[in-house]
Image (tube, rainbow over all chains, first blue to last red; front, side, top):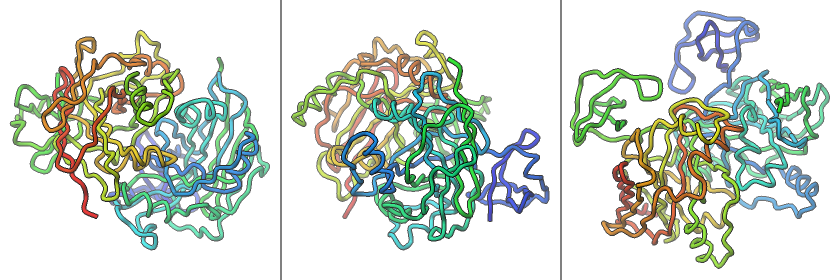
Length: 261
Length: 261
């Protein structure tokens, strides 16, 4: 099942996407819903981010090649995480499919994409073990963890390097089923595949993260966990379009534009 | 004016605190409100955290003595932040006045309090300059940034050291006026003042943080900014009670209890 969050006639709500048609619902996939009988053409509505997270978790370094290549670029020894230690991003950065990433006027040229699988939590969860960990996940979507690498290295926190407004595209929809073993992440820059990796080849799986997190942390419906990226991004410039496609989850597409100074 | 968020008869909402009486409202202090005419005795309701943040910002190191004393304890050179770079905490950790901080069973004895001033954002804000920065703040409350120092040093992120469930007491209410020049923060452990500092003697003021943040980040109603602490905490043990008092903002009191292993 595919859940979309969308706005039409000034109202934002959830619907079920079937082909190019949205079946409107009252309520939401977290607290409960009923079909209203109304339908909309996908092309006739504005897609929104598929959930406003209660807490926005992000794994950061979670694919080995990304860690090694990043360290090589900086002339450092790769520091591969030994334990699944979750990080955080901020809601102000979130934008929907097709919305524009605004590169701040004073940012350097080192603007990079990171195509990521996103787990969307559907049930409150604490103290889950590894085998039951995925029972709290209601579905999957796509994120693009846009980063300004100069700020990322220079600043004490990731506040502007990763959380500037518009730096966190997420969508286009939440898909409740995912064959992670078969999934491939392809990131296209202006239509050309520039990064491609097996989505499931993570250092720590989603189940491993959830088991570790819920030893100390209660997960709540609407929380999201971004699961990291592999490979490296070229510098993204004003006017470029970045598309992140994950098998079965569709394509998250966003143009980039530099703000005027 | 003092805003409380409270639960009575199974319903959670906002009210205005006058002495020991709550005047109930419909709506909230962010989107708008109307008095309902109903009143409740403060002692007869359950206080809740005064706002569920949209984004939970936290300054971290923002008082010089706290940085110097912390470094001294660890045998390191103090690294005083050169710029106002904001950090983040997570909503799962939030608990209300009088609720219990649960120390995880496997935590070390190095459980510390940090009594902090909290700014509550009332208006959407971007690109504010220093002189107008506080115009987006609707009021002030108190936070206790509870930390497990061994995990804080050992882990790659602050996930469990600062964001374990119950590690973020906030309250008791939001006060719309604050004389920051005259304010003193006193932290009491089992009734005895153990840490005391001038609340306003920050490295970077709230206005400085907001001006810096809103160059890149849109602040939204309900966002909170925790502004750091001064001094050092003794180790807090199961059975202890920590009270953070800030002049004009009341007292945030929370018992601590260690979970059974």
